[in-house]
Image (cartoon, rainbow, N blue to C red; front, side, top):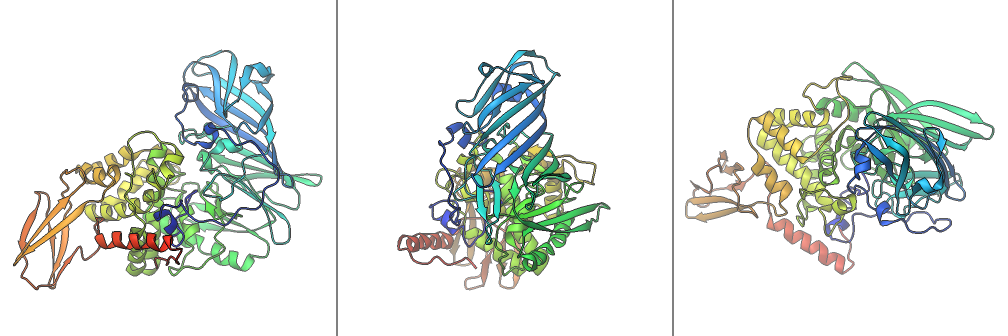
Length: 584
C-alpha cells in the first residue's frame, strides 16, 4: 500500500468523499518551516528536457538525522550518464533543505552556477556535456524536512518516540515524492540504477534500510549503517530509525535460491512480531506460485515497524498495523505492501496515470490470497467488500500524463477506484480469459517474459497499453472493448433484463454505447447456461416462474442499483454522524 490505505473497514470515508482514508494524528512537530513549493508538493510532473537527457546511474546518500530537533543533515553524491547533449543538470529537491555547497566532478561550483528557488534544482555545467559522457555531482544540504501529519496519506518524515521515550522515526514520501529528503528525479521513470545509503545515528538505535546491509561502522557514540539497493522505485527509498530488535531466517524458494527474511520490530513486541514474521514464508509461497520469483531474492524480504500505518518501501516494507487480527487469517496490510514488491517495485508504472498497475493488482492479490488460505468464502467476501467501495466518478485511466495528487484525488480523480474497481475488473478479466491466460499475462507484465527465473529478468516499466497488448497477445483476441469500458470510462456497464411471458431479453449498455460482448452466465432452474452476447441483445426462452439467477458465480463487474442505494445510505449515515458499519 502507499499513501492511500486500502483497509476496507477504514476506507469507507474515501467512498463518502471526505478524503482518502483515516489515520491517527501524527506526533506533534518541533519547529516551523516554510511550506514546500508547488513543485515539491507535486510528484510526477513531466520531466524536463534536462532530466530526460540523463541516465541516473548511482545515488550515494549520506544522512545524519537530528532526532531531537527534527532536522536532517545530508550529502548526496549522484552519478549520471548523458544520453543527449546537455549544458545543465536538473534535479528535484525541496527548497527548505538549504544547499551549502555543490561540487561537480570534484570541483566546487560557485553559488551563481546553481539555483533552487522552487524545488527544481538547476546546476549549470561549466561546459557542454556530450552524449555518453559521465557527470558526478556532490550536493551538501540540511534543514527541516517536510513532516507528515497523516502518514501515509501525506508525505514526509514521521518523528515519534516509543512508549519508553526512545526516538522512533520513519519516512513516507509517495505523496509528495523523493525530493522531500534527497535530490532526485521525482517521476516514476526517474529510478537510479543503484542506491547506497549511509545513516548515522546514536549507537543504541538501529537504521534498517533498503536492500543489502553492507556494513555497520561504530564511530564513538554514533553508528553508521550502510545499505545498498538496485533500481529502487523513487518513493521506495526510505529512512527508518528506532530501538529495533530483529528476527531473521532464510526462505528456500521453489526456484532454487535462498532469500533472507528480516523483521525489525520495537523491543517489547516480540511475541506479536514472531507471529507476524511466521506469515512471510506462506505469503512468499503464494506469490512465487501464482506470479513468479520474488524479484529481490539476492537482497532480502524486509519489514520494519513504523510509527504510521504502512507503505511499500522496496525490500523494507513499512508496517504499522498494530498486529491487528482479521477474519481471513492474515495481516491485510503486510500482505498488501508485500504485493508491491511485484506490482510497483519490479514492474513500475511509467506514469502516475498508470498507477492502477500498482494498486489494482496488489488489491486483487488479497482475495486471491484469502482463497489460497481459506477457500472461496474468503475470496468472495473480500470481493464483495471491495465492490461497496467503487465510486465510478472518474475513469481509472485518463489517457494523459498525471501527477500523484491528480490520481489519488478522491473527488476529481479516480481515487479508491484504482484499488477496488481495478481489482474487480481483474476478477472479471480472469473469468473472461481463463486462469492460464490471466496468470501468464500477469507474468509477462511483471517480468517481461512468461518463464521468469532468478537472474533472467530485470526491473521494468509498463503502462496501460502494455498490459492490454500483452493480454491480446496471450489470448489471441482483441479485448480493447473490455478495457475501454472498465479503464477509460467512468460508468460501469449495465445489464438490462426484460421478461415478457416466457421470453427473457438481455442487453448490455455502456456509457459510450459501444459494443460490449461480455458473455453472461445464467442459472435457469438447476441448469447453468453461458450466453454469447457478441451479436448484441439476446432473447431466450425462460418459463415464467422458473428460478432465474443472473451471474450466479459473480463473475461480472456491472452496475448494480442495490449497491448504489447502499452507498447513498452510507452517505446519509455520515451526514447524521451515525456509526458507519464495517463491510464485513
